Amino acid sequence: MGLVSQNALSRKRSSDNSQANLNQDNAGEVGDVSADLKSQRRKQKREASAKNKEHKVANEMQEMKKLEGFLFGTLHSSVGFGKEVAEDTGEDMNEDGAFLSKDRSSVADVILHEDNEDEVDREASMSDEEGEPHETRKPVWIDQEEQIAKINIARTNRLRKLRREEGEILVSGADYVARLRSQHVKLNPRTEWAELGWKSERDDSDDESDEENELVRAQGRGANGNNILLSSEDAVVRSTTKLLPGLLEFSRLIDGNAEDPSNGPITSVEFHRNAQLLLTAGLDKKLRFFQIDGKRNTKIQTIYLEDCPIRKASFLLDGSQAIISGRRKFFYSLDIVNAKVDRVGPLMGREEKSLESFEISPDSSTIAFIGNEGYILLVSSKSKQLIGTLKMNGTARSVAFANDGHQLLSSGGDGHIYHWDLRTRKCFHKGIDDGCINSSALSVSKDSTIFAAGSDSGIVNVYNRDEFLGGKRKPMKALTNLTTKVDGLQFNHDGQILATFSSMKRDSVKLVHVPSLSVFSNWPPLKHNLQYVQCLDFSPGGGLMVLGNAAGKVLLYKLHHYEHA
Image (cartoon, rainbow, N blue to C red; front, side, top):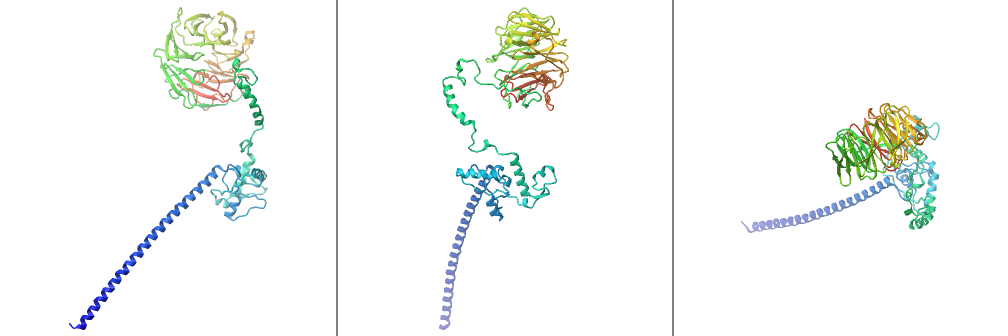
């Protein structure tokens, strides 16, 4: 090969090498540029995502504030929606400032119609005087279809009052909503006591008199200046509101024994003196105690008497003991505090086969059992021993105490009502129960001025006791609402209600308004199935009434006229 060709070949190789190096340098530069672009793009994406998150959080906070304003309104000033809505929608307000807003907030805070602008101006002036700034907020949501919808307010009678002119027929949806709100404001004006800073007229006088009263009470004296520690009068003035006849206000509560219903008929129910403890007894031989609150009525205790289906159970006045009896020669005494049951009887010198019916005197000193052949057995509540007997001409069927336990009323198969003086053990009056052949129930009011006598025919005679003892034989009223034998009579604590019932017919319970001697027309309730009522009782304060039926349930009712149970 020649020298010329060798030089040409070497120049070609060197040019190829330089070109390769140049390409490598260019590729490195391009790689660096693409890496920088990628890092810039990542940075921009991170910044954009951060901005989006901040914007989203800000929007959520703004929406939450709007929602709070929509739900709760403002606490200090009325809300004006006119300006912001006008700015958003491009609409202008009227010259007089009336604007029909699509606001969904509280009616009391929104200007809805020019009929209310006087009241709004007055409120605005008041807020200006107080120096409170007016806040404006946008409605949370606006229904665009309200402007499109058309409502015919002349088609129905209840919408014609929304017309402003006699010939007006169609209005827009927004105008329809505004007129409804305006009509609501007219019918339901704002109350003064709901205004912030409202103070009654008597607050000033109360503030002045409180200082004097505090000084008097600090010295242990009442409002009348008497020493309340040395007085036997009630420190709390009780309500003297009279119960009105006609309709009785009541409501049904959960059953008194809902936690543990009886397997047999309920034969006895009674409230403890504290009105929170309820005693129930039945033929299933179980005595149950429930704490009555009207919501759960929790069961406290159950006592089982193996050899005695219970016919009657009752508290002593002090509430420390309960007397339990059945169709047996003996009865039981329950010590509630110690949960101890003692069996008592048979009574010395008596051969009664059943002591199932009895009454306890108001002072808890004497228990009167109905015995055989017209005998009434008087037993001491302390010693549980027989202390005396009373003898009627006919059979004894019912007894009731009067005058704080010093006197006793009894009736039976001869149709007479006996009045006994328990201090002398003698009958001081005997009178015929008008129209009665066989008496079946007796009850005396707490003040002993009125008594009621029921018979086998279902008639209940209500007597004024003083008139009856004076020789007047006609009752104040003969109630003929029951058609079967009267099994029970019960006055409430203030003597304004008399309950009568018969266990021989379903729902056979009547409540009598004693002052007018008329029956409450809405009792028994039509939709409530009382079934065959066997017993009933009123709470000490009259606010509750319980009924035990043959199905083993204790129905509990609240009487709204009385505040306390």
